Every structure is written in C-alpha cells, then in structure tokens.
Amino acid sequence: MKEYVMLTLKKALQTYLVIIPFAVIGGITVGMYTFEHSTPEVIEAAIEQLGSYQALITVTVVQTLVYSLFAWVGGYFIVERLGLMKPFRFEKTVLAKVCPVIVVLGLAFAADYFVLGRLIPEVAADYEKGISVAYFIGSLTYGGVIEEILLRWFFMGFIALIMVMIFARKEDKKEIPVWIFITANVIAAIVFSVGHLPATQMFFGRITGLILFRCFLLNGAFALFFGRWFRKFGIQYAMLGHFGIHLLSKIILICVI
Image (cartoon, rainbow, N blue to C red):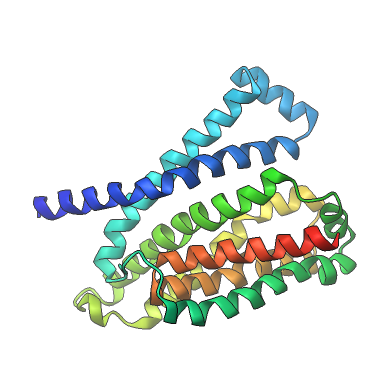
C-alpha cells in the first residue's frame, strides 16, 4: 500500500510539472484582469494591504499554484481509484470526434454577444469595451486548464468517488455504473454555475430569470461536454474543449466588435 501511494504521488508530481506554466500564466493574467475590473477603492485597499501591484499578482500566482497542485495530486489518486485514468496524449480518432463539436460550441459561446447581448444591455456593453490581453490569455490558461483540474479532474472525480462509496462500494472500478459519472458531471456543472452567481449579482446589480439562464448556460451547459470528454477520453480533451471554445469565441468577437 505504501509503495502504491508513493508511486502514485511521484507520477502525480511529475505530471504536474506540465501544469505549472499554465498555473503561473493563469495566475498572472487573472490577477491583471481582476485589477482591470476593480474599483479604485478596491485597488487602493489591496495595494495598501499587500504593498504593491506586483505583490498582488505574486499572491494570485502562489494561490493558483497551491490549489492547482492540491487538486491535481488529490485528483490523480481519485481518478486512479475510479478507473478514469487515460494516457496523456491526443488520438486522431478522438480529435476527429471532439474538434467539430468544439467549433459548434465556440460559435454558440460567441453568440452570447449577438443574442443575449440584444436582450441584456449590460452584456453587449461589456463586450464592446473590448477583450484585453489579460482576459484573453487568462481564459485560455486559467479557464482552459486550471478550471478543468479543479472542476473535472478533482471535484467531479470526488463527487463520483463519494457516490461509488455509497452506491457501488463492491463494484470493480471497470464496472462502476455510468450513471454515477453522469450525475457527478451534472453536479459539478451546477456547482460551477452557482459559484458564479455572486459575481453575476455584482456585475448586473440584479438577478432576473434571463440573467440566471445566461449564468447557467455559459457556465454549466458547456461544462457537461467537458465532463463527458473527461470520462470517455481523458482530462486533456476536457482541457482542449474548454481552451478551444474560449479561443474560437474570442477571436470571433475581436474580429466583429
């Protein structure tokens, strides 16, 4: 048992080395984006507390590294236990299935501006401010990689593990009912959407049925695809999907707005 734990921990730490650049860049750009969208009072308070803008960015990077490391290592043990571990490589046959869907989802994500932007003035106004470099890069690195580690690799896996312990404790990991993973995927998507409600309330100053629908659509509906790809093909395809949707949608919006 001890050998298994040490070997798994070693593999987890070795593979995390690939994640470090994404965590660092994601932390920097999220910190920059947060600064861009904060009020002068909040910025002044943060600088007063931490000493400088650079210190704030450093804190954001360190936080991102710490919780992504925890989620990656913890998730590695969980994914191994559930039999969801897949080789960390891309297969042409799987890419042929996933990439067309990513294109469709990317177009649908960009439609937020063209459709809901007409119904919710604040949405269109926010897009028309432009997409900053920090927001663009952060959505790819933090959104596409770090969020998938937190929400699919760790959280979805953790929910599935709890359900296995309750409903399928005696099952071999190759025979765990699919409904458990589907349910865990839905729960993870809902929790991620609910987690965006405070920021949504702050941004709009209100929560209406349409605003609530938009929050769950953008943060939950697309996530269901990522969770399915994680289960069937591996976490790298969930990352690719999340990364690709942001990349395509933002290129479209940069060209159009």
